Image (cartoon, rainbow, N blue to C red; front, side, top):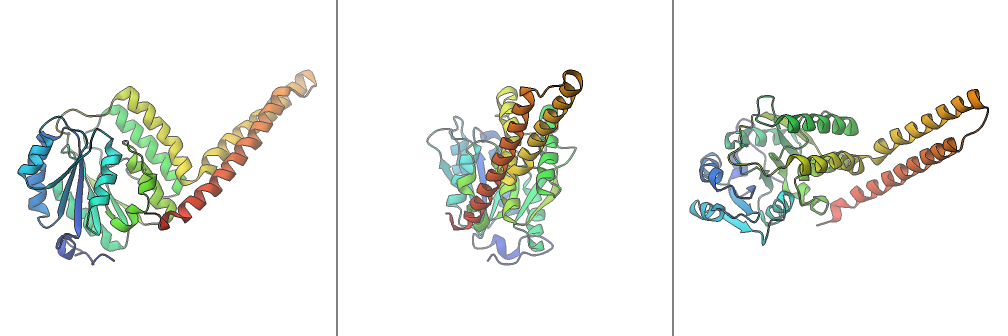
Length: 303
């Protein structure tokens, strides 16, 4: 078990002896890393620093070598989630800190996130406030995801997609096999922790404007994030996603039957289809629920 944290600073014994590992996935982030790495070393000088270069074409690697931090280069751009997994596998710390390398996450917030682990939780997520820099469509999308995920787990989720988080390494590695290679890894790991019954809390942070151009694209990533909504349901409780759809088909089928019976005195084929679909959808959700339960039951035995 990790050594206890100092309740006031969140540092003490954790940041000594490389018990704290900071993982930064980076793709063409030389401009921000030039400042960020220096600030991190001032804030947590005894931590282990791992920068995972995700196929950068700028001076990202050279900047990392200048600051004498461990840099691991992917053979090609494999995605943000793949970089996170690579860093988590290499890290020696019992506690992992994941941050974006684009300057949106501030090193001075690390002690506050670490301090929350004293409460006995397993993951602390930096929740971006209203003043944080984000485009309008991303802000709206994040609110939708937060509300949906909160309904799924029955707990308030302040920021489902934040990449700034502190987590117990042993618990995090249990779900490496579930994490996607793309940008939706925060969603997956958050829902996985809730599903497994691990403690998750949120600490408010301010995220300034990123340095350099964003790697997100409105149309491509908008569709991808839309699919996250369905992934949330399949990861946590598929029946909560399928049951409303089944109920909708059931009510529509009964309503259409009532209408046609009153107006035409017959039993329509459409009603048969809708009622059959309702039963099928509900059964798929029920089976998916059982599969999900078995998947998380076995997660602690995976590497």
